[in-house]
Length: 486
Image (cartoon, rainbow, N blue to C red):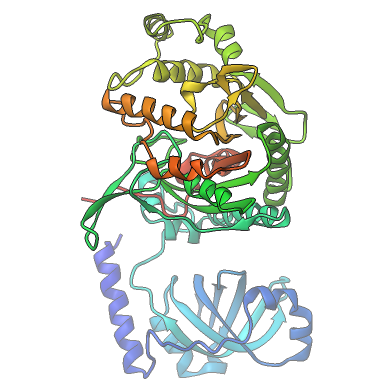
């Protein structure tokens, strides 16, 4: 079997042969009349009309049979069989046979007909090279086998694997449906900074980079402009949303990525109770629009988004499944229970908030959803409004799907004095080593002092899309971040 170097050398010889025959192997112009999708949609009229048209694409398979050449052309919209005949093309047929490989891009001019086997086909009267490929495509049957190589050479995986290509298309449809829904509901799409002086809006470790023009270190944002969008509520806008990239310098697993797409929106004069109704409608719209169903099998759970959504009590669920009352237990009791349940956790910066979070993660894996998790302790959410009937808890919910969190919203804290106090508590946690605790943002507190109306805010990331596809998060990204190849 020839090596890659030998195959590439052979293709370089063919490239030179094209040049010597007067064909530019990488021309700028294509001059195509129709996409292949348009051809198939209007095939009968084209075949009956007998008019010559020019189409183009990549050669995906090639069969040379003496004075005949059959090959499949793919232009990104559809596939079409092409027939070339030596008695029709003369020397141009020989040039094709001597120089064209699977993977090359060609344009073909000809008429359309249906073969005796019922195959829609274009019979070419001329052809020209559009781009010569110097490396062979993955084998049609074996393809790319190594999981890391599939992600590293994602462009090839998308090209040869219809399922992967469909995931890319559905990913686009998913975010387009999000945008459609928000615009239909009267929300204004906004852009907020990606580089920030203070990384705010979430509990996460940020990436740090240096801004040379200002000579200062800045952070890549860890939320889709949460604090900025709330400043827009102060500014008098009442409904805003943003779909954009988020960056978190944290661990990588099936659910977590370091840079990903998310939606965040904010609605003035609304609260988390109204938000639950809105979010349920949003999810049903987007999921049905993208997948044409509301019923899924996700990680072994049967999930029906069209059914009644559950309500889960945070404190009650943990007490039921672990026996720990997180509102009364101390850190030592929680650590003992974590060890008893054989739950591993990061010792660095470990505190009561992290202990509660680890207990919850143990419990949530047992919940199918869809449902809303409510009644979270105030220490778990520095940006949410306290419940009026129990100030130890906040007006926050998370969407629970197949044992994981897939969206979070809350009645936004608009009391500047309370917000300042909570930022101060977070600052103490950071000083004690908790790198995910939130930073004190004085400018945001100052904005709140000018007054922000009651507001509901919500965010959901592409983790939801990965869950709906029932695939690891990296496999649903178009080009996931990879370690450089040695």
